[in-house]
Image (cartoon, rainbow, N blue to C red; front, side, top):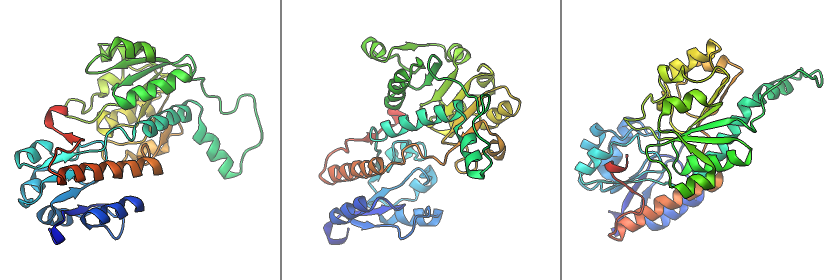
Length: 328
């Protein structure tokens, strides 16, 4: 620890205001560019740092954690999802893990609604025509999409983000349905005007739009597999702003190619940056580069959460956003 301060290694560039505050409080090693750390760089970081601040692009698996130095005591993740961190192994090594929940809720819910509208109203197709300079003028039958009001929206995962999506969908006149590990309190259901489905299969079969808002865990990997995807109506749309691994992407691609689904809006992909190339060729698929939380306000608030977690730990207390295996 230089100057008696905690040694902190940050794996990616963060908003300037966050980096400045980290530098004021701790002995920080920041990135000079925004490329992800290599495996060797991550290994060096866990061997030297008291605290590691990774992002979802950094794979902090059991092999890496096993080679960490004894001084590493906190992995303060910059992000809400921790499926890229082996929390169990970290706990066994006496390393705490924290995240940044809550601050991305509204931003991600906004993007979910944006994708629903983009797919159902064919916004990218209209944009492409305008950018090409080939628009010939208004036509009564051109770019006909569908009205979202009155449609059934099924929300898979009714946590903070799922509930925020429900509130927005309700304002758009959509009928809100949901499936969750635990049913919401009656007063919450009433406020959201949401209908609970104990059976995911039964809900999926009846929805016009399905929104994926659950985290990626061993229990949710390929929760929307080929069999369950086939339960969707051919006129249905699926939107995912959560984690790509929840959907069997190859099965989804085959169904879209076969016209067995009306469309998809995707902000995340099963294999990270390696999205199925056939998806890019379809006009009824809207693809974004994991932009759900990409607001200036959200990213700064994420940084503030990281700082609070580190500062609380440095003061000898449990980080307020500590993640334990039982939560996953």
